Length: 80
Image (tube, rainbow, N blue to C red; front, side):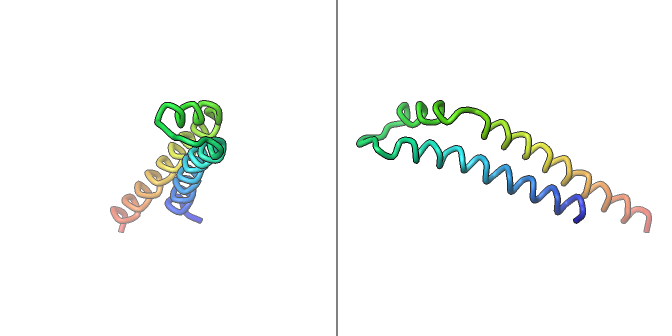
C-alpha cells in the first residue's frame, strides 16, 4: 500500500475513534429521561480523553502520510 492509501486509512481510523467517543457517551447517557448540552458534556467527561487523543494522533499521522504521498507523486512527475 502506498503512502496515500496508508494516510487515508489513518484518517478513517481517526473518524471512527472520534465517532466512538460520542457513541460511548450516548450509550452511557441512555437511561437519562431528559437531555441537555451540559448533561451530555458530563457524559463525554465520563468517557475520558483516550479516544480523543488517539483520534488526534491518528489524524496527524494520516495527514503526514498523505502529504508524503503527494510529495512523492510531485517528484515523480517532475522527474518525467
